[in-house]
Length: 263
Image 1 (spheres, rainbow, N blue to C red):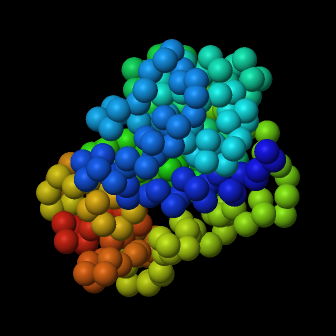
Image 2: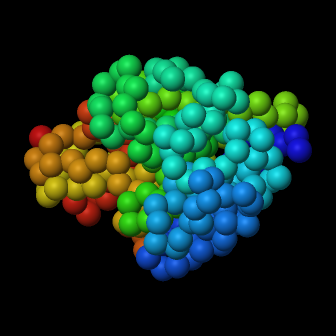
């Protein structure tokens, strides 16, 4: 079946917030297990890591498994299938497109990275202006389907799989940050010149992929470190302001509850 990258992103995006701890991720596992035969005869359980199971489930749901060379629940095994399909690019320094599959190895932190594959997700947004990409991943911190903001050329990127999606008008609707610095419709950033400036962390503080403590953590910023905000922010329903900040070339959100204006 011919599908667009936007269709794949929309399916994955609809699962954001599903949690292994709460058991709300079970429909993803059930979709994966519905496809037969299962690789190596292994049936995914509800307590398993399911990052690759989630990526596979996206394409099962769209009846487009052939685009990724088959399903998998083991990332290194899936890389082999990507190679066989001819869609694997073992270069973490390329700039991908929305809908491409990103593979990480936590065993090496520099490029080129050809270490054993540990984790996988799908590119949702490409921010060419700030040289970052937003990735949707299953089994993030706490077993949640969440987002991660990754800089271009990050040392932990093993490589990318580049499915041959259908080129239709729908592809033009894929969110791509280039000028307005907005993440997505649901994570729309606001601008206030009063928030622009340099801040200091009051305590060790998570930088997260979105506004809210339930969002995926990117990095812990130690107490006393300086971070910069260009004036963009988001606000949770509890009216807690989260600044969109830069720290060590990484971009993400930090709560103003634990920040003070730097001298």
